[in-house]
Length: 500
Image (cartoon, rainbow, N blue to C red):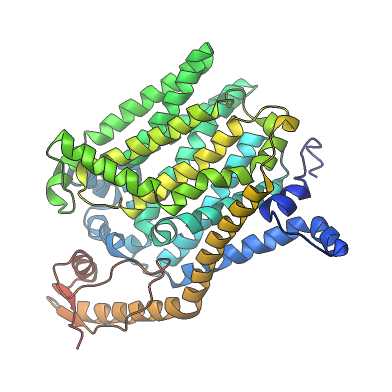
């Protein structure tokens, strides 16, 4: 136990020993006692082994598609002028545009840098979840338990993500979608700490952090804008219902800031230009078409295994949630039905921008990843918010239900980690070698002006949808990835030869 915080609670072994591996009967009493004594280390080893291949695959990560897109702008205009150029000609997402320009290793001609961004991205996700657990529970959970819980949640998210490649390795999606999703978790927690801070100086710090995070989300994707709007509407609505006027002023004030900042981003001339330039966008022609697209996207989301298992997974965490129910913020006592309605509303309004502009089903994987993040963490918060203050009043989950849910979750994580180990052993090294050879050929051809390069087709690898991207180079030089590579390496065109 942390000596500085004697009130910190050590998570009891029965939760992990009984609830995470429910239904398992240990015939040997000594073995049972040994497991009960060492449950934390056993669980930590299991989580580490599950996460290790996902981290190691970062060493084989390669740049892809849009990662090559903005280097010419940076080299032509410089970072600041390139930011204004993108705002006027491509996208009003001023925050994620800045990340793409400043944080992309390819803008510094560092191809191997995406390996570093991939591993840093996974570690930062764990750090964000750890910070969230500590912020919301205070000193009710020890630091090492908070770290284990955060790492476990990161592993579960990585295992359930519709596109692990997009969520873990693809720099462009990491900057445009994952970073704003982390802020989507941290901003409401900063607002909560702002309202609970005892000193004026601390309130100023938390208010600045909340405002900065709100402005950053406003300069990100439409998806994170609408999801944060839903959270702020919930906070303001609950505060007004309870006549907590000071709290309502905070939520309404930051909501107004979100409206103003996001209006600046959404009305940027670059958004209008992109609707014309981006051939993948197909705006709807009628309300009926919007509703048909929306229904199709939501049906695909809500019937997918990941979205079905998440609400049930919350039941596994009821015992630990009950242990720290007293640490809940005063405003986080919300009926489960209301929380569920808010989560479903988030899915609807989060899917709506894609129904308006995309004529494709299923939802683009990078957006589905963020909606899963919303769904997973949202249900965890909803389950905690609905618990009574007294842990003894929490109804136990039936053993059979715990067993079924525990086995299902273990299978999901084991399958994802198993596929990652297979990639690490077989496909990832071959994939990295293929692209390193291609990059060498591209660099060599780029030394001759107006070169047109034809690359030899490579052996087909098994794509387990983890570190390998969904698509590669095409035979047509006009294909998107081909044109980006040609521009980046200074060639007139790049294509892959036909398979003999």
